Amino acid sequence: LDFAFGIKGLGRLRMNAYRQRGVVGSAIRSIPSKYKTFEELNLPPVVYDLMKLTKGLLLITGPTGSGKSTTLASMIDYLNENRNYHIITIEDPIEYVHTHKKSIVNQREVGSDTETFGSALRHVLRQDPNVILVGEMRDLETISAALNIAETGHLVFATLHTSDAAQTINRIIDVFPPHQQEQIRVQLSFVLQAVFAQQLLGAASGTGRVLACEVMLATSAVKNLIREQKVEQINTVIQTGGKYGMVTMNQALVELYKKQKITYQEAVTRSADPEDLKKLLQKTLSVSS
Image (cartoon, rainbow, N blue to C red):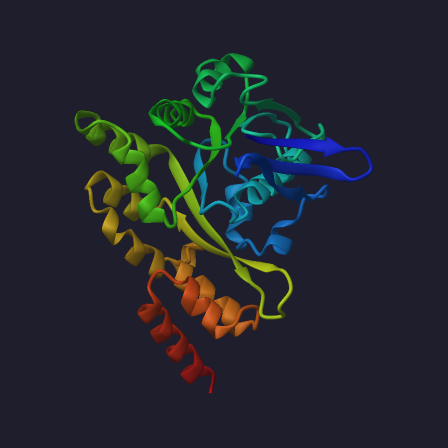
């Protein structure tokens, strides 16, 4: 059983309750009452450019507990403060509660306000939104609806439990039956704007956690690779796409290490390609010396 609730004078909590050895166990996580700024979250500066978008699909990915909900809440709050939008969120459960500012923010919870993500998305365009947040793209119906909505000229935010940009793209395409995948590649190449792949690392200070973020922007090169079934080459485009604001996870880890925010061991342990990371670190250390 997974849900979120508020306690007056304390704040909001997210709770997962389960049975173990005949009794009830639970895991409870506090949800901050204040939204963090992009700088406080250690998000890259290119996020401000992405907040100017008015259409397309922006994906926040990472394992459970990697800060996806916090990043999305910060992005929605930024739009809420700076744009005259109608924002609809579909979440399971609602974690961060948004009040109306410059925008109107309507939040729908799966299970109480709608049966499923898919059923909410089937009718969402009739509610005249500018921005739609999909808490999680779990199945074919939800993914297909998100792509179609982005294609109609709306801005869609969504999450996936994937570790990097290439895996994210493959996960979306592979959900569909083989005879549809060519069409989905073309559609995804048109609507995708960016992928932020996150993980939270232990801070070098010993207290708190630090966000590491891979950023892929859907440049013309990336779009071509998606259409041509060459997704495995996307990491190379990210590596050389620094001028656009792109950064690989290993590059992000190196920067955090250089700033003494994480330890060498933490960087190596959390890298998907430790050998490449060690080469980058060695190059960085030799240049600095």
